[in-house]
Image (tube, rainbow over all chains, first blue to last red; front, side, top):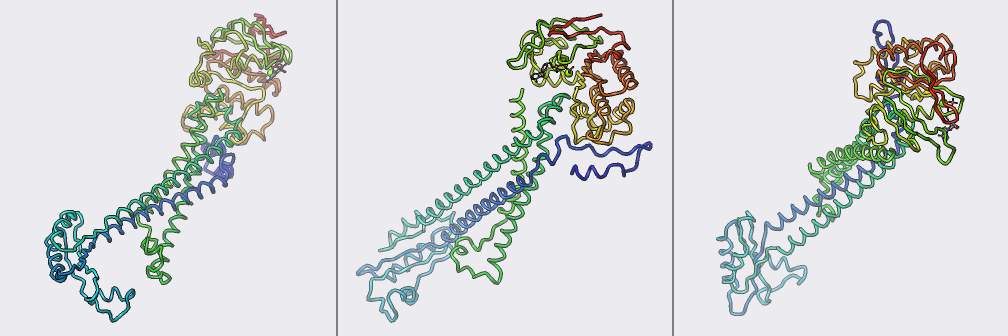
Length: 318
Length: 219
Ligand SMILES: Nc1ncnc2c1ncn2[C@@H]1O[C@H](COP(=O)(O)OP(=O)(O)OP(=O)(O)O)[C@@H](O)[C@H]1O
Ligand SMILES: [Mg+2]
């Protein structure tokens, strides 16, 4: 900026025949502060922070969808018991389930279907009625909140050999795993930001050492520490914004490319493990908003860090 | 305005450069500070400017014991003092205009409010043509005048000048002395450290003479 200012001297319209003053140069020269190396460090840190945040939102969204999907279907298993008519018990179980609140429908898995399900393990042409194979009633839940699985389980004790599997254990484990992953993600995010703050601290100290005579003269003409800190802070604010934006935009580009790849012709239709887990790397709007938030936090953090560093340094000088 | 009591100063483990200084300078007074090279004139001015702490003794400035000042009070007092440094202390990346305007800028004043004053003062000290250039291309005398202009732009209550005419010809020296006299008439206390007998002969003011670490005032 200052380089440009030096050049524009004098070609503006003069007042009273005098050459126009250039816009006042910055008291702490830009060149003495802003290493492009630091901008790059801030950009990389922001990029990593945004990716981590994107990953966290991905995991959270995926866990949420999963829980929803698992919870939408529960099964009632009927073990065949000697001397009991399994078909009658199946019908009884289905009726009980249909009568429960929040249930959309219930369906008995037919013998033929059960055979097909078991075919891979037991081979075809199998006579099921000769084996004690459990039968299933699939219950579709319309509103998981309205359904009282405890009461349903209680009601099903009337049906011989019936047990209800609402996947509670699964969803709990899934929630716990997701929570741990989210915590790890947040931990990484904090570490990345701490590393960035530390590099800003070192850079600020360097800038102050390089501007010792400027700081001295500012003190001599009666500048207060807050004013001097402000002169450094404005550079770091700009630097933080530049680096943060660069990193944030790069991360958003990665999100967008990820989304495109998983949807486009190259997409494998949800067969890879990761896609099945995360619904095809689709970082939602939370991820993009989070990236913007990271850019903002990085700029504010950079400015505040440099300000505090300068003020602590000046306080030590006296 | 200025009161010294038994002030002594030594640098590190060196000899005592100022010894048992006890004196008062009244408000609106005008003093020349003189003495051989190395007598401690610059050191005494630095004590007055609070950029140096005495090894012992008491310094009272504007009615305040300077040993007990907070940082905020220190910058407040610096705004009431104008200092012309023997080595100028201009900032090389700022133009002459910006250097001279610096004391007003750090007080948060807007450029539109002080521009005319600064330009007038620069013209007065003969730098009207040089206000857009950076200090490295100024001559010694021009730097000196820029440094003087920066010291007086805030109309300080106390002006300290270290060899302010050391680099200018006698005509310009007289002109600068007139500037200091004008300021003094308007109420500023002035202390000018100088070797220049000619300069001192032009204005009848008490001379504070530093010799062997002691101060003697010749009315
Ligand atoms: N920062 C310092 N550290 C150690 N000794 C110093 C320092 N500054 C000055 N001195 C010594 O203190 C003595 C007084 O120096 P000072 O600069 O006050 O003299 P002066 O009267 O201003 O001289 P001149 O007329 O040449 O400017 C000198 O002997 C000098 O060597
Ligand atoms: Mg000296």
